[in-house]
Image (cartoon, rainbow, N blue to C red; front, side, top):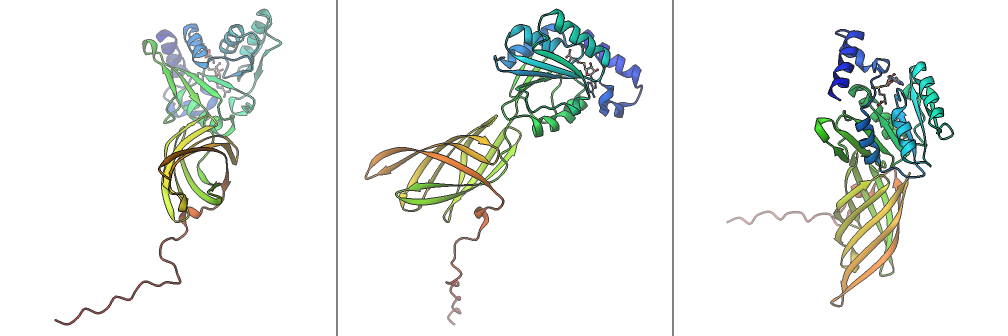
Length: 309
Ligand SMILES: C[S@@+](CC[C@H](N)C(=O)[O-])C[C@H]1O[C@@H](n2cnc3c(N)ncnc32)[C@H](O)[C@@H]1O
């Protein structure tokens, strides 16, 4: 493994001596195949399924997609590489291995690959290339897509899992849904519809948020985001319904979240549990920021002048 890494670095140095900025050009990522042991570890980490579409960005001799297709006889896959000879070689190998009905390779720049149908994306390119592809992946890939890389990561996007064997890590990320922004939803409590105005913030798969109901604000706790699946809790007093513990769980589908909310509260000294459907929609503005507190029709009292001693 170390030898192939050293070969890659030496070869790149020979191709572009002293031109470190040139590594940021996609065509300078050269072909060195991932060690088969690492390919196997990436495939194990991906937990392949029958309905997977596995794509390798910069597929080289096709070894990652070919190994995946041999590991699971139903999945489909394709790879793109800038080097025509490697693409021809990979398609020939697919034919020889009897998987060419499920696996194809195309000569294409990785930045022109259509990621929308992929469920698993693999790559091993220069760190700069992977960093640039991160933006494409987060924008184009379907939430829930598993992304695997050999050896190098993707900048500050922390992997969801790392297999660290012998200082030769392989990484796994789950593409998170984009949830940052304003969301609103209604919940009926004691026959009264309450409007919730949420503000969600996100750094890759890490998410947090706050919410307002009437004139009270609360923190959305224990938020998790895995692909399109979001969960969080909220404990707050909601109007006359008293203190309510909410447990939300749903699936993000573009500008909607569909799921359920479990509610727990104490009524007449008895704990009451209910479950309701939960549908949140994205909003362009948020009532979270609207003024609260003092009503404009009741100006604050004018302070009385202090009595003279
Ligand atoms: C380090 S090799 C990895 C090969 C294979 N993915 C593996 O892990 O065995 C990187 C590959 O990316 C290809 N490549 C470099 N720049 C590219 C680009 N802009 N578009 C498509 N392929 C590219 C190279 O030709 C090379 O085959």
